[in-house]
Image 1 (tube, rainbow over the protein chains, first blue to last red):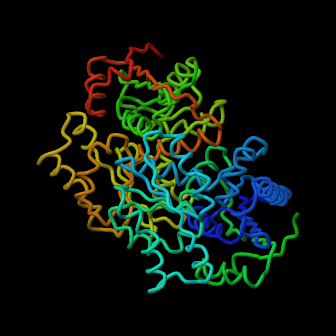
Image 2: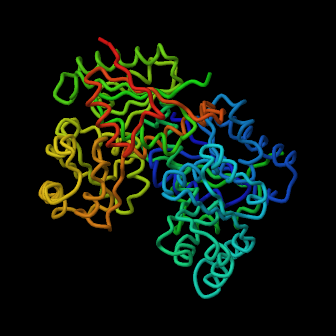
Image 3: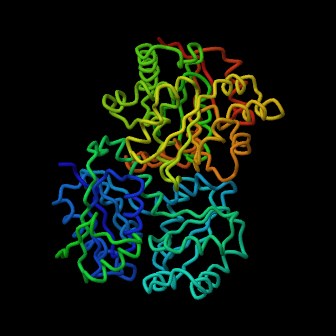
Length: 269
Length: 269
């Protein structure tokens, strides 16, 4: 029995990471747990986020996962170091992969970051970037309307264009960034709109794509790559409403997911 | 005393990986060993490449390196698995990072690979790509003139253009690849020419850039990131001619290296 990669998120945003894991690592089995009942984590205290995150981790450890992906910016900011210290399996978050990709792409060391108010306020991306390369100039901008807009299913059209344009306006005028990190797992769903507004001269980095890429790296170095050629059947768990979870996951995967995923209710906490 | 990242190569090509490591990980100290006296490894037997590689590894282990980068395609193809099994430190090669980057970038699953005759004949890139994602179609092409041309210092101009154009001709006509891996550590030095010939619609991937990026990932997951803010002084060792090594390294770094590097002769084997 091949062991799975465990993925946790406060809700559904982490499914963009799952989507990329399926695309880049089609042989790997995934077990996803979205704590939709207690979403969002952003406004919660550090202690509460840590408690909830550990509850999710314990749920997945019982399923014998071989690696953990923390697909939530808030949980990454507050718990990654602790998880890496204490778990016997490799752990990766969503912040550092985006930061490393930006350092690779930027030619002028001017990097933009957009995310929720909580993520931007935490300074987690700025810290991650400067921790690796202190020469990087960071221009961070909170985009508080993006997640609510996306969760309403508004991904295209005049309204989406207008919201993205107005929100990113301060970023366009005041800097010379050549690279922009989408520092929220929801944002890949509006990547095309963001790219159009910010211009083709800027490389837009999806932290979901980059996290999946680095998961692949870590599997190899730890010799955990799945050797079986069987098509994996994934398991998704939600702590909240099942119908809503299925609806949103099908909009992210852009087709019915029942043939490749079993979705169940999880009781944790 | 902060521990260094060790980098080995059969000669000077691995210095493009070093260049990227310095750019993406400016706080990390590097120790490079180029076996220029016995270069190239390409035409040698597997047993001989393994023996030479282990001799280089032992030289660096005595310097207490914290991680090993095998910046040589031939050595990666023949020794990576063995090194990962037997060394107590993380080990990464140059083949898998390029393969993973290609899997991330390609939208149509058509990937091209160019490299030396030895690398292409070994099928190492095709294996690495299909091992992760069997749906990938690979179009591999040996470019036997590129390394000799680059080692002659011919990086630009009519002659370089003509050689690159003629060599890549078969790749342009017969496939729909959207991603091309530079499967040789010398090739980043002619990346612009290759990009111009192959067209802007194709994403050209430098295995040197990608290997440095993944080195950064592995340092974090193994909690090996350098915490000191001192500017590192690197050490380069060559088994061959010192003057030639200094000349080539300065052409790769595009400026004198004496302020940041000490270069010494190494006796191994």
